[in-house]
Image (cartoon, rainbow, N blue to C red; front, side, top):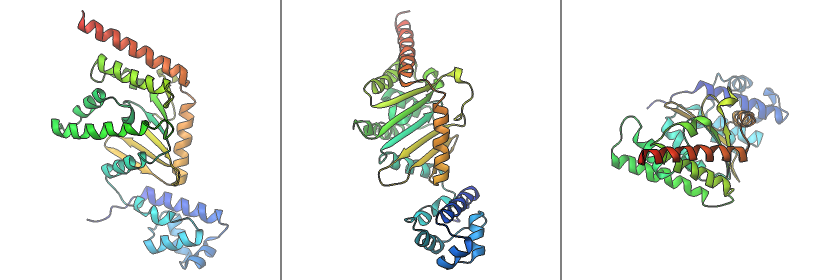
Amino acid sequence: MAIEDNPQSRVKYGEELRRLRETAGLTQEELSQRAVMSRTHIAHIEAGRRRPDVDDARRLDQVLETGGFFVRFLPTLDGRKVAEHFKEALEFEGKATVIKEYAPKLVPGILQTEAYAREILSSGYPPKSDEQRDKLLVTRLARASILDNFRSPEVCALLDEAVLRRYIGGPAVMCEQLRHIVGLGKDRRIRLHVLPFTAGAHALLAGFLSLMWFEDLPPIAYAEGVNSGRLLEFPSVVRECQEIYDHALGDALSHRMSLDLVQSVAEDYEHEAQREHHP
């Protein structure tokens, strides 16, 4: 199967090469001599016009002392399927020491209750059999085990108010789900912030974003849209995602005010569920 080139990632790769070269205080000519590459080839890589091969990347890592950065990120130049990106993101999630997520429409996976997750997995397209759904459900619920450790990872959940208001499974399911989130917040297991509708336009309108930090790896970001998702590892791109997140966080309610709002909405769902059972 032919490799699908990713021009946008090629440009980012070149930007990182230029940044790290300049940080090292080297001109393109000086780098070309030390890495045994032509200056023109380096210029093309920095401009995103050429794709470096593995030998190029190894020499660049050696000269710039980047700890394997250029070899490690070569796969980002290939077009990879969303499922592969998401699988990688899940693997990173289990190793993270800090996780910050923005959810525009649904409760983030690690915070979902069983009833809420089952409803989400039952409503996808194409339809899944009960057996397929239940296998996915086991995986989804297992992700929440990372919250069993009180200290790691640190989790910050930034939720759009739409997450609280969207009916998933009915009022009883929503009441249980929101109270679960409130419980995690009151137990100091997560930091919770809600972006209220009144905040209007904000920096994260484009969609879901997850930021992760690690003990022995550089931080990463994972962004997701309709039938698309991408693991972002270039330092400049990750920093930009972190800045976008912080900008949106500035428009959100405080942790305490967010807990109060979520608790209030949960009570509304509880009253509605009671009316359904006792009209």
